[in-house]
Length: 121
Ligand SMILES: [Zn+2]
Ligand SMILES: [Zn+2]
Image (tube, rainbow, N blue to C red; front, side, top):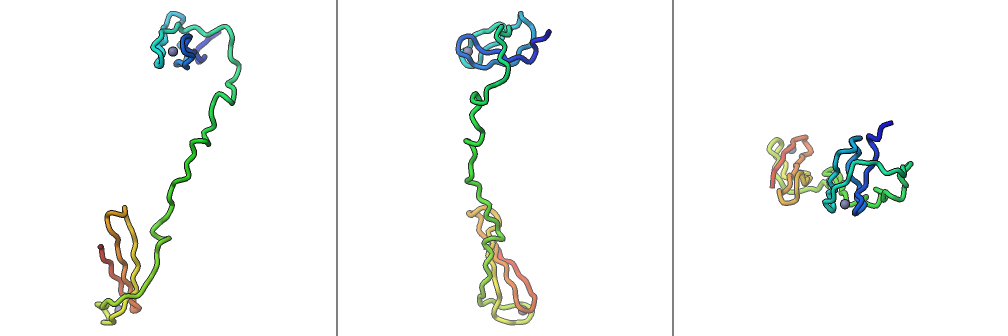
């Protein structure tokens, strides 16, 4: 019969100590109250952990994650800009926030002739 893997609790404060080493002469130091506990599994064996003993992890769930991508904020507008290829003084432009907000944005220009240009603010 082996007791390795059994859970040992601090006799002073009830804190869960590390797993039993199976060595009855070993001493398990409680990290909460500092009490030294003998590595002896209590006679009363706790069969299975009660579900109520473990608070639901769902409580810690957070939904504050922002999933707004650069693609979502893409809006094309027309501006006065000279196309270097065809000389047309009108280009479509899209502003994209590539990195963090304090690093500025990148403007993509597009002409109807197919010419493309980027500009970093
Ligand atoms: Zn303790
Ligand atoms: Zn053009």
